[in-house]
Amino acid sequence: MFWRGRRQSDNVEDVRGGGRKLVVAGGGCGTIIIALLILFLGGKPSDVMRVLPPVQGRLQMAPASPRAISSQDKKAGEFASVILADTEDVWREVFRAMGKAYRDQKMVLFTDITRSGCGAASSSTGPFYCPADE
Image 1 (cartoon, rainbow, N blue to C red):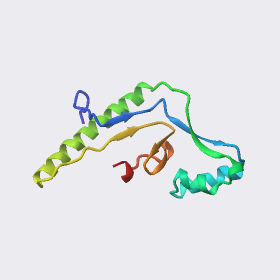
Image 2: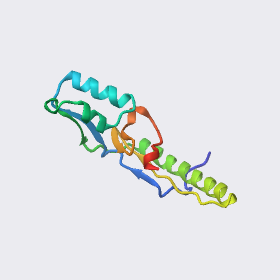
Image 3: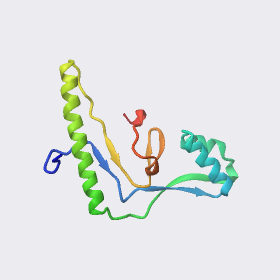
Image 4: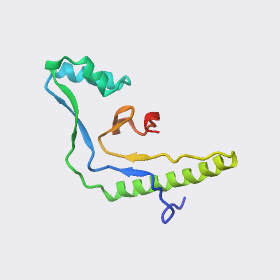
């Protein structure tokens, strides 16, 4: 597949290199384990905050140290943007044929962790779609 030089989507938000990390302020190992269990079982960060006692500390998203994006990562982002553009073109045509309008979706490229409408999104979980973010 030849993808270089093709249209890239304008609906890509690339926050790689300046991502965020999950920090537990206060508490101990038990707090960390409880928080991770809640997040892994599909809970939202607000659920974690409700469960933890006030004296134990809080989960916080803190800025990570800025990192340079490798040329390989840059190419991967460009490739993903071209694929998204192709997807937009195809679905616009499919929807147009049905007499409807296709709403473009946004793709967020990130490292470590980011916020989504579904709560914290970790790069270790891989790609996912959050309906709350549309």
